[in-house]
Amino acid sequence: MNILIIGTGYVGATTAMVFAESGWQVTGLDVDADKIERLRQGRLHFHEPGLEDLIAKHVHSGRLLFTTDKETAIAGHDVIFICVGTPSRPDGSADLRYIQQVAEDIGYLMNGYKLVVTKSTVPVGTQEQVKAWIEAAQRQPHPFDVASNPEFLREGKAVEDALQPDRIVIGTDSAKASEQLLTLYQSFQCPRIITTPRTAELIKYASNAFLATKISYMNELAKLCDEFKVNVNEVADGMGLDPRIGPSFLQAGLGYGGSCFPKDVSELVMTARAQAVQLHILEQVMEVNRIQPTYLLDKARSRLGDFANKNIAMLGLAFKPNTDDIREAPALRMIHQLLLEQANVRLFDPVATLPAHSSSYEAVTVCASVEEAIQNADAVILCTEWAAFGQLDWENLKGLLNQLNFFDGRNMMDARWMRGIGFYYQGIGND
Image (tube, rainbow, N blue to C red; front, side, top):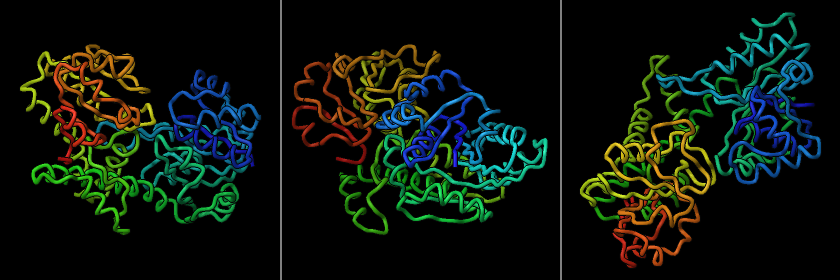
């Protein structure tokens, strides 16, 4: 089977790599000519460790091709994965315009049986909509199946998750579609769940919403830990040893961000509201996450008196390490507030950059190194736990600062050691 991947963003590029690595012939289709040209050269348009090397490997072998010619691509492939974006609308619901456009293109251009697989994260019931859009766009009545096959990728660890998945979820009512997808994934050693399309779609949302809930729960608990002078990291260690809880996603900090958790939690809440169901817990999860960055800013403001004309060094912009993704990054919200309060913000991130063509952050000084960012700083705020930040010699670097104030939004540093070398150190729940 030759595979067509429509959409070559984070999910699409990773999916293309996975199937090429598994021995299949794969073509990536996108309307963005610049993106396609980069991929044809084996270069990624985003940062994801290890992925570019594998893309380049299969481009050079000829197993992985890229094109902007949708007519030839759709006609020439029997298995088509939809990997386009599903951004949130202003009200928090999913915008399916790109899914609909792809479905209509497939319907209009198909020339025989097609297995259409939705890999994008979509609301419950989308598989049925995709089927209807394809049928309505057909010029001739060709047979097809539509299945759901959600992705479970972590940004920064997409290669590991893609090549060694912890489960494969396939949602389809078609025995033919199920058989084809199982064949595509035959080399993977992990549980396979064959279920209905609606169940598969909900598994994806429910998984991310539950992980977001764990994060917000620990962030709430961290505030109580501060009051009791208890270290939230030790509490998390004790909790995580219970196999019913596990250690993952128990790290307190500035809150979650990125392209998945904020969008998926919001869209699940809106999906429920459309069915007259209120998901009270998830509504509170979103609220806790919304206000979490202000918690550390309040501590910094209390220490400094105010931010006006203070030099604030921001370390980290990406919502997590090993990615350049700044969507819904807590650092952006903090920078916005600091600028409102007339602070002088100096920023360093080893990979991520501020939004292009945005006037909101023109007053931020973007620095080429940590040393440049912290020069004459009245406070350092660590927003992203890049490993390099923890490897720095802070005892020698402290001479660059105007005041030795360090606010650790990820509880990355050893509080006792930082205080021992002279810093006023404040994390989140780690006194």
